[in-house]
Amino acid sequence: MKTAEYFDIVIIGAGFSGLYALHRFRDYDVVCFEAGAGVGGTWYWNRYPGARVDIPSMEYSYSFNEDLQQEWSWPEMFSAQPELERYVNHVADRFELRDRIRLSNAVKHMRFDEGTDRWHVHTAKGDHVICKYVVAATGALSVPNAPPWPGREKFKGEILHTAAWPEEGIDLTGKRMGQIGTGSTGIQLAPILAEQAEHLHIFQRTPAFSMPSGNRPMDFEHEREWKENYSERRQKMMQTPGVSLLERSSVACSEYTESQRQELLEEAWTSQSAFQLLLTFSDIMTNRETNEVVADFVRQKIRAIVKDPATADLLCPKDYPIGAKRLCIDNGYFQTFNRPNVTLVDVKSAPIAEFTENGLRTAEAEYELDVIVTATGFDAITGAMTQIDIEGVGGRKLMDKWADGPTAWLGLMVAGFPNLMMIHGPLTPGAQAQMLMVGEWQVNLVGDIIDSLERDHYSRIDTSEEAEGWWAEEVNMLSHNTLHRFANSWYNAKNIEGKKGGFMIYVGGFPRFARLNNEAIADGFRGFIRS
Ligand code: NAP
Image (cartoon, rainbow, N blue to C red; front, side, top):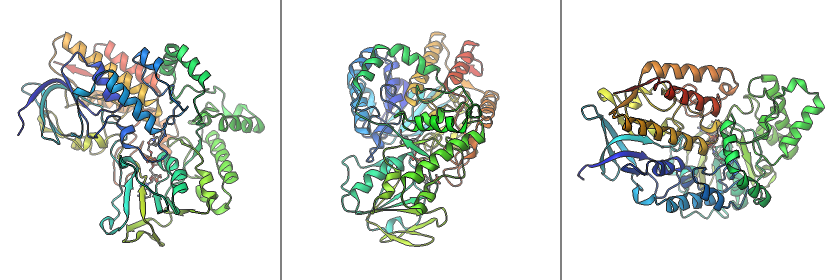
């Protein structure tokens, strides 16, 4: 057994937030454990063909260093995974972060020692670290969800998950392929698989709303303009309740005539600005009728693009509001179904039953396949924390405490788990805001908290169940004011059979979230217990 090492801070995860945390905490004795063999988190693991960010890259980039944001150039408006991975590696080198990162070394077990107010952290490679603080930058979408269909071992071909795509890549040319899942990931993947496969069967349980991403080579005028105004733009991003700096309407749908509505929706669809469609009317996420106007517009688009009417009908989402799941952003997804080598299979009416020796069997038929790609999403939001065996005060385990769903004051701290702070934890804005920006902001908040605890010679910070209750009320009140709760998704843990969670995302917008966090700290650390 290795001897214990001592650090001030352990960071879990070397994704975008964890890397910035390493930089922010550089004056402390800090170490970062990362499960992957490289840095980048989401952008390390999700290297499936077609993986691409859905926020413009001038926005989806670090803001903490002026030289970095001035010197870096993105080749496309919406960067593809290899470019994001190149960027994050550049950041790791430029800010000399690598020597404090231990790769391929996931944290497995953590125990809080109440006598010393220290965490004992144990890793996959047998490291034992004793530290004062743990900052969990474990990611909201980092544990792949692979439904437990039987027969996996029988299948003679290859089964891949999009979130664990082989680093060396894989040649899919001429293969009989099956793709399971049609969320944001599946929608990016399908057009590329279709180009390579002999035949592609796409197994769909729930159709998705999607709009064209508008990706294109970087417009250098756009880049120059952003670089000249970066500080002002970054400020503006902090004030926007959405995921991107887009035109937001303040006018309700009912204020427009039918032809004005169609004109506005058409403009949004062709705007080359992903997500613009959701901002066309002020009340799209609060008024079902308005939402239906926009949903119907997308259904008409699907029917206009997809030539076979039965396939088009199957691709039209009909039983949940648009935007209630994160809107997908595509590069020719619906057009893919016009190819002769692509078949859509409805696995809602005839669910997937098992893998077989030669492919996949649904309740209706067997499909012969060489490769099956599962684009089945994630054990989102809580999965990365609950897969670590975390013991807090009195030996209570986090996975037990969260058995019926996560609790956390401000989405940051869990009562009974002192000196442990989460970035992108449950009940934070997650994908309802720009995740890179929120991650940076939360790291700064945690940095300020730790600086102040050290300055004032505290040994422990915790929160209370009462404060967790306040935050739960805030989160639930907000989700009841919008239509998000009317879809089954990873936002409410309903993407995985049997998972309990309630509504796990903060839909009040980043500005309100940030204000409430700041007010709690300024108000004498309201909701926290320092000792
Ligand atoms: P997802 O949205 O959860 O989609 C998973 C897909 O797998 C859904 O179509 C789901 O069907 C299907 N599925 C799951 N279990 C199944 C089962 N037992 N049988 C049949 N189908 C099943 O996951 P994702 O597509 O990976 O996206 C997750 C999130 O990651 C997104 O919402 C987004 O925030 C982020 N993301 C972003 C980008 C980007 O920036 N461009 C790209 C990819 C992902 P149901 O809908 O019926 O559950």
